[in-house]
Image (cartoon, rainbow over all chains, first blue to last red; front, side):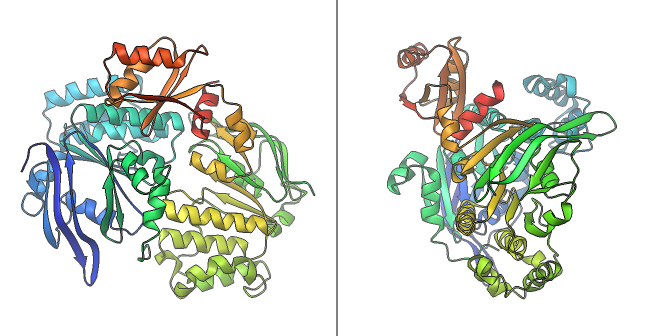
Length: 248
Length: 307
């Protein structure tokens, strides 16, 4: 496998009983790419993502993440990826500093590395004065930036962002995307799911899942051209409305 | 009646141990009968506090408000009979079936499903195949449809929808807005809140709200017309480096990433394209593209946030 491919999936499939949640999906994601993974509720995104994160064994097909095999090397995968979701990321009853220390420790950073990382991270986020603040008392926009920084505290090959930016003000959202661009420029791959179709337009390439299959995969500009739409919202609606599955 | 909702100088403070929070600061606006009015702002802007005050579930510290001609404090019972309220958090009975929930809300309001079936028919037929299922076991989109049916079953004159589309996928969102427009056609006034800026365009008028303050109240077109432009869209191969280069130019007022483009406003009007070309040249950017564009609601919101 090539070194520049951070994800390779070939005919990846997951069957639950007689229900095929993910149906032979094949795609590759490059190093440093911002890859959007879209689909309506129930299309199979979460199941696919759980397989790629090493949390769920596929029924058939092949996949590697950060060079590791999803069947045999799922523990190595977990160590080499970052994960952040809107629903759960940080411990609200720990301080900013404690959250950094906790996650850095979990990812096996040495005490020396943790010290350095804590300092640089607090500096980058301008949170030096809030290091002893409980995370629950931070504004939502700051929480999201902190959660993202912590998700990549161990310099993973790839970070999975599961609907990361709901509910924040537009300025905080822009700053968050600025951080994503910066991270991708450093060579860390970004794999992001979102319900905001305008956010899909930030991605280098976007895949759209319908009923367990990848129905479209291309750059936002080319998708808009192919489907004759003037926004990703238009592209998504054209594809997702073909779905026959009920979102459960 | 011309105004379905009148809000005058409403204030609300919450006191916690350490600090007080001013949730609503001197809020005033009116909603016309029969319009879809959007309250648009991020989490923590004060949207839910305002909804609770207007649905008589919370008392304001200062100011006055009325719904359908009734004062929220003195005539709260009348208001409760005539409004429908769909809170942000799913608040139906998870251990009752779809049908039982709807029957329950109908009987609370002394009516029956049959009596107002016409109003909910379009929405209810979509969940009817699952009417024996417990509400707690429905998917997000179906829960939302059931909640809307329950909020409508007594034929309210004013409908309050607190973030009905949060976490809902783009297809369901679109369908939901189509439902709202059909309800509007039946004469129901709708106050709806959202943190999705792109939904502003689906409302007749909107109020942009941030940290307890109204930034502006206008039609979506009116808000866009007020934007202090001109606004330029730029792109290049290296988007992050471009963002950095433009943001650090002293002539630039603001530069934010917007999907495939960055949106740029200069401090002084005129000659924008030339100034941008200079930045491209100095930074040796490739595959550049630059053109003027019309602002969207998000551009306007950010510009108003800074004022």
